[in-house]
Every structure is written in structure tokens, then in C-alpha cells.
View 1 (cartoon, helix red, strand yellow):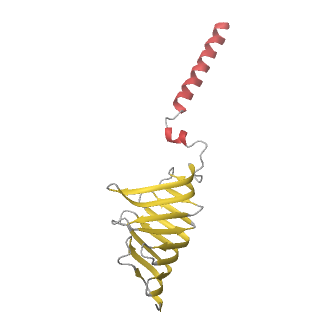
View 2 (tube, rainbow, N blue to C red; view 1 turned 60 degrees about the vertical axis):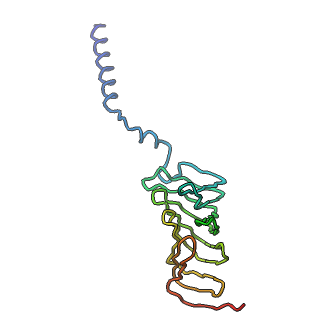
View 3 (cartoon, rainbow, N blue to C red; view 1 turned 180 degrees about the vertical axis):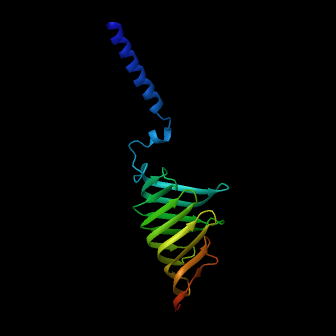
Length: 184
């Protein structure tokens, strides 16, 4: 009788072990996600100072107090919830400054989406104000389709949209709604 009980016990243990063995998946990515919500950042960084280079030359420098890292998503991005300062350098190392209350950098496309109280001051004191501005780091191009106010040495130009290279040598206000000429 004892042999039968031991035989049944060994069979039951064997069945449980075999069942457990075949029910386990070797899905390391799923194991990594344990404890991380899809909607939560994978990391939070403070006092950020990111420099972007092209052929050894600094083309942009982004500074922020806090960033949320969502590199765990299918379309990874970094969110700057406490504002940013972005310095853009042209090939002559002339600096233009962009300040915004909020920004997102899309990692795969190198696109920076600046939002809320966006203010650009160029190296030659031209000033652009808008609520949203995109900066394409690869093309070194700035653009928006939101209302803008652009101050040059001679004029203040209001419009709906803006398009320019990072040097502001061909800055253009789109759909101009008003021009105020400044006197010396």
C-alpha cells in the first residue's frame, strides 16, 4: 500500500513539474515590464543639460529642470514638464535662444515640440513669440502653424505660422495679419 501511495505521489509531483515547465514563457521583455505601467515614465531626470552635435560641432543645447523619460514606449520620447531653454548655434557659432514652458523631444525623429509661452531671441535680436514651435534637429529648421508675432529691426509682423532655418536668414511669417513699422 505504501508503494502505491509513493507511486501516486511521484506521478502527481511529476505532472505538476511538467505542467509548470511547459506553462513558463521565456519572454524577457514581459518580465522587464513587471512593475512598470505603460503610462508611467521609465525614469525621471533633474537638472538636464543635453548637447546635440553634428560632425563634432554643437548645434543645440537644451537645459531643463526636469524630464520624464518614456523610452519604454513604441514611439519613445522625453517630456520636459517644467520648461526648457534651448540654445541653437549656427555654423558661425552664433547663438539663438528659445524658451518654453513645456517641451517634448521625439527620439526617433529628432523633433522638438516646444509649447506654451514660446519665445525666441535670435543672435541679431529678432524676437518671435508663439504658443507652439517645432524644431527639426536634423534639418535645423523651425516652424509652426500657430499665431505668431515676429519683431525684426524694422517691423513687428503678426501672422498665422512661421518657417525658418536655424540661422533665421530666411525667416518668414505665414498668413500675415498685420505689420507695424518701427521708427528709429
